[in-house]
Length: 83
Image (cartoon, rainbow, N blue to C red; front, side, top):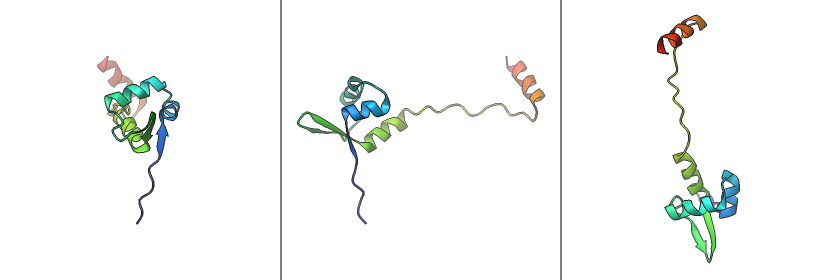
């Protein structure tokens, strides 16, 4: 079975997709955040896999432990006790 071709993006495209500046993306390149980036004579191309890996490593993971309660009254009592 053939492997699907990798998508490559320019620095400007990655900056636009992530809503960051091109200088931020270039800084990440220097830090090694895009290890498979290819420099085509000054035209740097970043593979989609590297962009996804960066996003996965910085994803916000909220604390979903929460407070268990069977009713609003029970929830209020637990919140008051915790405060």
